[in-house]
Each structure stands twice: as C-alpha cells, then as structure tokens.
Length: 79
Image 1 (cartoon, helix red, strand yellow):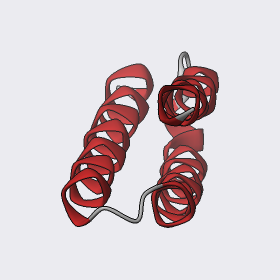
Image 2 (tube, rainbow, N blue to C red):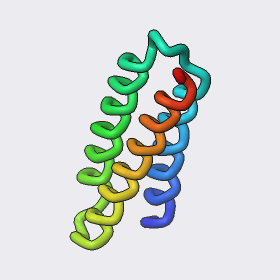
Image 3 (spheres, helix red, strand yellow):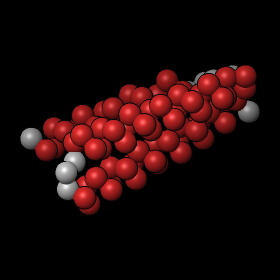
C-alpha cells in the first residue's frame, strides 16, 4: 500500500514539472511561480502521505530537488 503512495507522489512530481519545458524569456517569472506552486503542492503531498519523520524529510528533499530542476529549466529555456 505504501509503495502505491510513493508511486503517486513520484507521478505528481514528474507530471507537475514537465510543462515548464520550452518557455520564453518573458515567461520566466511565470515559470518560477509555476514551480513554486508545484513545490507547495508536492510538500503538501508529503505531509498527507508520510507520518514517518524520515520519509517525510526525504519527501521534502525530493520536492526541493524537483523545484530546483524546475527553476533551472525556466532559466535555461528562457535564456
């Protein structure tokens, strides 16, 4: 059962990041806001799915890594 939740969280992470590919320079700030919304949702998912502190912390780290990758794509696509 827990592995199903992990798959759902992983799917959410991937699905939310993909639309940021190929943005224009003028859209960088909108892209960053989108990344922030995704990170917020992902962090909320961590709270909902994981009661265990270690798994929760790992989930938050994953959410932050996804955010960094997302913002990196915003800048590299817009530059």
